[in-house]
Image (tube, one colour):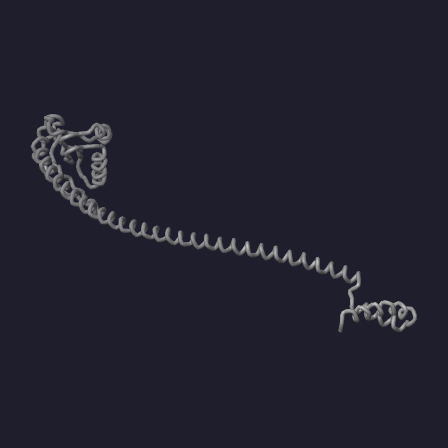
Length: 253
């Protein structure tokens, strides 16, 4: 259809429409219904704008929440990486610790082996020392057997022929006296109980006293206590005096 005809029809419709709206009430109602159903009213449009605006805000909030969620996910991923790194470091540290423990255990074994060797060497040393001590002790006893009879005669008026090593028993207990002798003092019978030690200290006096006291009930005669040695320490002097023990050195006459 030519454009000029369409324009004429539009002009005609616009001239006739007001007349029809005034004269034909039914046409007016129908047209109103059509227009009200076909076009958005102002109030509806305002409401629609509000809904669209609210939806826009909601979408914006959702987008922001999504961004925060993504940020949290990234932070969690980073934290997970750090955790995995720490776990790896701990695992490595654990391996180093286990290695150190193994090294310490090995060192402990070596130390125990050395200690066992030292203990064995100490036992051997004590055995040798005891042998040497016994050897010196027997040598000292020989000296005592020569020196003591004359000393006792001159200083205590005791006559005694010889000394011997004797083992005395008190019940089931055995006490060794390495300088045992029987003699007379001013016509009275007397027993000499002596001990020979290379070096006499306070501890040697105490041991000797303990042995003698265990024999007191078994002795039937008066007895004199003495200790004979190469050297007498000052710590032995006081306790020997208290216990009435004569201390005699090899060089005394």
